Length: 424
Image (cartoon, rainbow, N blue to C red; front, top):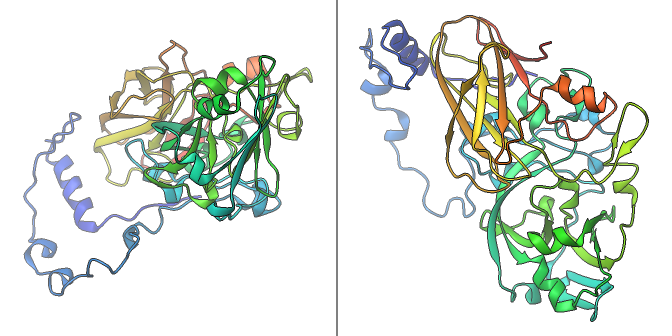
C-alpha cells in the first residue's frame, strides 16, 4: 500500500549534495552546497511569474493546493461489508503539528452520515430529572461556551494489529484518530437546567442518525468535562462529524462521542445497549470480556518515516516525527529507538501540551543508510509507559479488537523504504 510523495529533482539534488559535502548535521543545520550547474528554477522565469493569479473570490471556501490532492482520508474496502457502516482513516503521515484539518478527520458511521437542518434539530433531556426539557439550536447557543483541544480516537484504532503486522501505513494502522479544537456548552450546564435527581447516576446519549447510536455514560464524567459541541476548529461541525450537535467525551473512546446528538436520558444504572455489550467490549483469552473500558491509554506512533512516507533523500540529516496522546492527561516525554529497542533516545516535544490532546515529537539524526527498526514509546503525565505488543498480549490475549496501544515498529531498508513489522 505504497503512497509515495514525489519530490522535485532539484530538491533531491540539493539535499544529496549537502550530505555528500559532509556538512549535514543532526542538529538540523544544513550547509549550503554550490550547485554544479545553474538551476533553471532559479535562473529562469517560471510560468507562474508570467501571468496573474486567481482573484480573491475565485474560491469562496478555500481548498488545499492541487499539489496536495493525495492528502485525503482513505478506507480499506475489505474491512467492512458496506460503506454506510464503515470507517476511513486520517492521513497522519501527511500532517504536522497537532491540529487535524476538518476535511480529513477520520469518519466512523454506524448508519451513514445524517444530514439535518439545524432549524429542525432538537436536544431532549428526560428521565430522572426535575424538569424534562427540549432545546433548539438557538437555545443551545445562548448558554456559556468553552473551547478545548481534544483527541478523538476510535476504540478499534490499531485493532487489526492484535494478531501481528497487518496494514502497511500509519494512516491505516493508527489513522482512526483526529485532534480538533471544539467549541461547545459544558454538559453540566444543560443538566443543571433540567435538574438531575439524586438517584440519577447514569446518562444515555442518543444520536439522531439511522443507527440510533447510544452509549451509557456515568454521571461523574458527564458533570466533569463533557461538552455539547457545535463547532470544530472554529467552524460548524462537518456533517460527517455530527452536524449540528455532538457530544465530546474527552479522553474516552470515540463511539461515546455521540454524533447528531438528539437525546440525553438520566437513569440510575447503565442501559447495556448493543454498542456496549456485543461491541466495544474486550474479549479476553479465557472468554470473559472487559466492559466499560472507556479511557484511551497512552499511545504513540512515528508518522515519518513510515510505509507511506519513505526516506527519499538517501543518507544524511533525517527528521523523524510522530504523535502521542493519552486519555489520562498530557505527554511530557516520548522516547524513540532506531534499532528495535536496544537503544532509546529522548525525542524533542514541540507545540502545545494540552490535557487529553495530541502531542507532536521530533528526533533528528544522521542516517548512515543502514536498515532501521523504528519505534516510539510514550510516557504520560501519570507515569504510565506505553507497553509493547507482547506485554499487551500477555495480559489480554489475541481476541481483542479494541484498545491496542502497543508499540509500533517500522522497518526501513537501505533504500529508505518502510514496512510494518514486529520484533520479538
